[in-house]
Length: 266
Image (cartoon, rainbow, N blue to C red; front, top):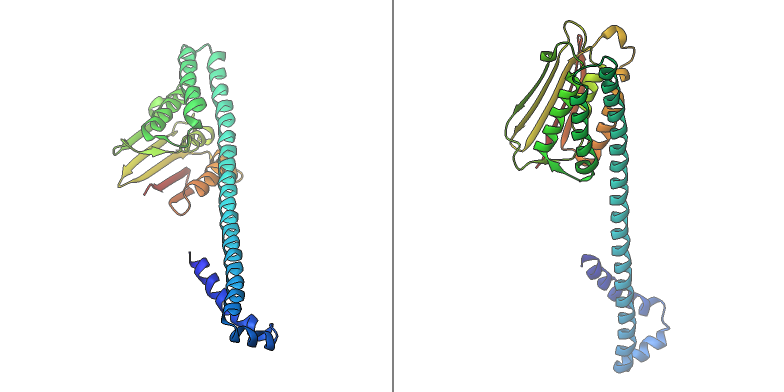
């Protein structure tokens, strides 16, 4: 609307400018003497300008609309690509765990396969959605943790605490699993001082998620060794999903690797 008003004002100004500088003086004088002819000429120029400005405005609007469509398609494409990278990575690690149990002829092998089927069902169906209930994501994390604990000599070394009410809250699927997966993959879970502490807190439309695990600093040559592709993908997803509404921190203190995430939902 503003563009159209400015266009009309410009047309009126242009009419006077054209008459003064570009039309022959005698032609302008004749139009001024013959009011009817002058009105017809000016009206024609004015209507032509109006139709042109409307067309220009429509073209601008369509171009902006098309730019937004392309931008959204690109965003969805990038998110789908990052999500698809998470699934094979997770599946590869989990199958390795089950293979280890089967090699030892563990009595927990069948239970592990059942838990994996639950996780795969979530990944195949719920993970395709834009958002899922936060409680479903929590259940998914709990199943994953229990599956990983099957191969640990001391299962009490893994603690998962939940504070707050997750009812009526939603989150993008597979957003929290990279934290936990990274802790089990790079954590020194077989040592005497092994520990993985996981905290999920919900308060005032904010989610706080923190995972803390010990690492063998002698085995770590570079920081990227403990970050992994999962956390790299997570960082990219967060930048696309929650620009300026999240805080993602990774740090190493003594022999502890600490990763945390805070998201403002509103």
